[in-house]
Every structure is written in C-alpha cells, then in structure tokens.
Image (cartoon, rainbow, N blue to C red; front, side, top):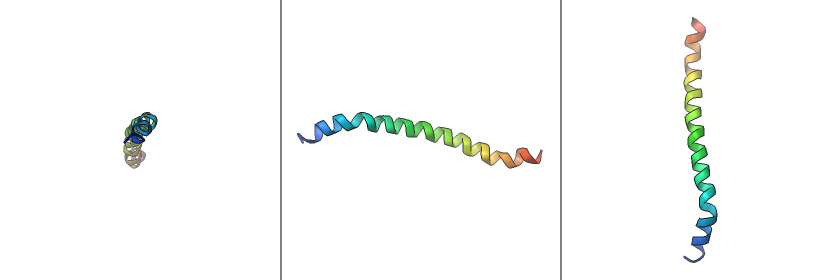
Length: 45
C-alpha cells in the first residue's frame, strides 16, 4: 500500500488528462462521422 500511493499520485494526473482528451476526441469524431454519413445526400442535390 505504501508503494501504491506515490504511484497513483504520480500517474493519476496524466491518466485524468488522457481521459479528458479521449472524451473530447470522441465528441469530435461523432461530428465527423455524422458529416461523412450525410455527404452522399448532399452530393445528390
């Protein structure tokens, strides 16, 4: 337990930043996927 606490303190912040960035990338990818899926309909017009 004594070795685990410093490890979590050192690694915890980078893990939190990574999850935050992955969440932001996921929302951006959702909009890109939606745009790509609507592209054939726009090209028909």
